[in-house]
Length: 467
Ligand code: PEP
Ligand code: CO
Image (cartoon, rainbow, N blue to C red; front, top):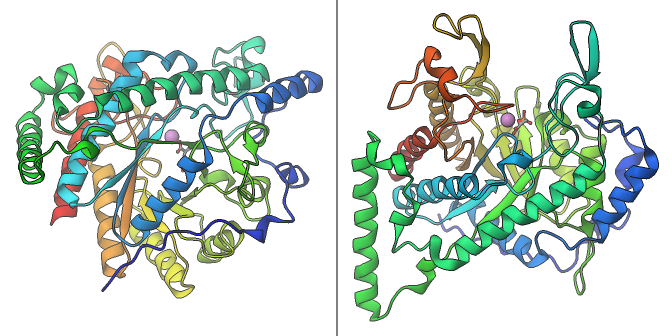
């Protein structure tokens, strides 16, 4: 089969002529905080709206074209990062480690899959979290729930939990600082394929996966040298890579304030990030998030889970991409290893029958969260959220298989991970057990793969892509 990527012509998109960035206000908006002081909220939003954007429409168009290629099997998308960034995570070592693990994973996936990888970080703006309950009660005291650093603070006091509008401006600044550092590293040669040793984290040398990874980088080095010998010149394209940002577009006033028109182009662009996504809880046709997202020119991620019926999915696709633009929609399915075989096939069938153009990717994290009680040791009795490496891997493997059987393609993966040596998910090459979880459990929200588990996951997926 000949696959041609349709590079989107986005010059004219009249479908949102009836739309404005605040149209969502007429719809039910869930997962929004209540700001006690309306005039303070307006001042903060006015400030946010006047600041320069974090990304540009050109970058967004480049990403759209790359997603269009991934939709026809010519690229693979890797999306990864923290469940929630915090303002305190805006540190050079934390950012560089996250970049390193994403570069290493993308190297492994490119090598295994034999095709370019689109690198998308859950970073430089992943500051808002959906919550099951609006309030939290402890010892008879009820306070608003913590919704991420974009909204409030985690400490259980009335002050900390009050929604503070200026945190949105702070988040914009933290995102800009993060992105500036990432852009400088990437442009300055840090991502140079000739020097994968720059990305080695200290503990790579102690890892059981060291030999496999080193063998791969040696092979890549050899083929680069071979190409350079053939070309008679250094391969410059290998010295820098594209990196894109993404976050859940949850807090609508924040997204609205950064949604702009740009000279010589039609429509509205959410310039807070390249690839905003709609969370599982808010991907509801007719509600505010879908109404906001339908008007922006960015590519859009949509979380899809056990509650997403075929009818709902098709309704979402009609609203979000009425004119079937290539590169526009990334579906991120997250069912859990136990549920994917039951839920995914009917959605693939529906999308195929309706001839909708999407990029299917798998988030094997959010359907595989367990609550465990530590049985022994100094933390006996403590309850923690965790995920098993084997469940995560099993969901990805089933996803590849289901898409293959349906004649569809799994074109990407989505992970919660960190470049650090945390102990939040169990299993993996070192066989981390429940008892070991408290040694370095740092996440305030969902458990992340640590550096070694993330690399192992990439090696396993690369084998699958190659074979
Ligand atoms: C997330 O990606 O952190 C998240 C909350 O996912 P979901 O919307 O799929 O539950
Ligand atoms: Co999460």
